[in-house]
Image (spheres, one colour):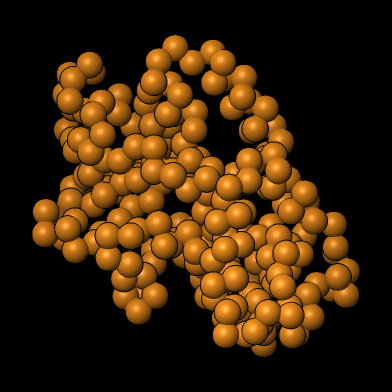
Length: 234
């Protein structure tokens, strides 16, 4: 199998969702329903709170012995058909910068239903394995201290998606979707492609939604704090 070409962190059986899917999979169900079963498990996984996913993040790290990895049959039926090697690398948070562009129209032409990407990469909305418990406790504390709606939204954001669908191409703008840990879009913006590199670079220094909005031009209390606003750079 193509397992030899995967980074160790992305090997079959090493991802948190691997552990979840293999634990919950109904092997007695007909193989014709496998895709439906996979999708149902994705949505069950995304419905879990971050702390409830902690055992599945921990489980792949427990088994350093290759004997603990899934069988060839489990890989063939459950894992390999539904994710590319690139998607597994993204799931493992390895080489994200190099591997994070998904431009195969045969796989990713979802039309307006951008959330279908989560069926292929459910761990897009996971925090890093080692910080799951600390991040969850921190977010609960910060939610109690949040002063307004923007603070609450900012706390919920765990990742960003950049979308260049048909609408974005017509408008000449890239869509930015800010997602929470359950895959919900809690905020969205748009940006000129020419500003995208500057924006993504700036996000490495202070990667929060409010930081992003504070960097762009416009009245700090004005339209840039509206969902869907364009992020304008000098």
